Image (tube, rainbow, N blue to C red; front, side, top):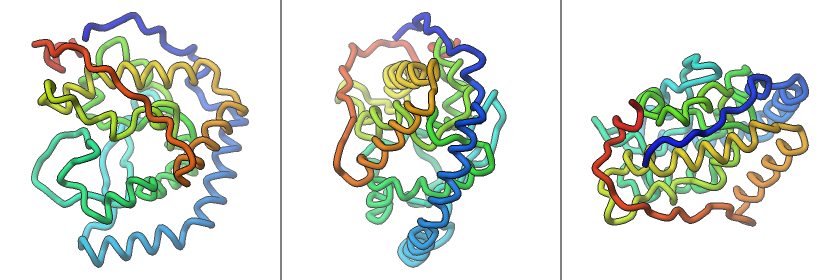
Length: 235
């Protein structure tokens, strides 16, 4: 897939407004207090069923390219190597990990990042260094925004979308060439007008998704496989 001219968001919308930051602090603090017992129970279950480490830590790209170490509850077996992209049927995911991912409980420690100001409640997915450097040039503007705990792309294009069709044998190429442009377009639509009303709407949709009431995941049409590599799209 070739790069298209994707207009980046206005510079002002890349900054988290005072109103959004206030919402971040209030919601993250309240949820951390309420959900602390669930995080603790999940951590104990991980320790008993999978052993150490309890948390998954990885360097992610933050606001304006600043790196930070992101923490999640571990949902996968410790292996020497594997693809950066995790698809729904990834054999590295444990049975407990599958449950945590399906309910998004593995993401709860990121509320601490929201409280610290490294993340915001609604925004683009915090991308790994290894994948960010391979983004198509036209999609890189989204990496300047503060990453979010949830967001349009995270609701519409989840792990089910990361499963490539049979003709695509490389899950990372599928993600970078097909999914990233779709995810970036969804996130930029929000970032062009990140009002409190729209932010609260995405928070409510996320709550409904976690409760199993709604599912906003969109089907992804598979383009023809090309010989273009993921690294070519980033050049």
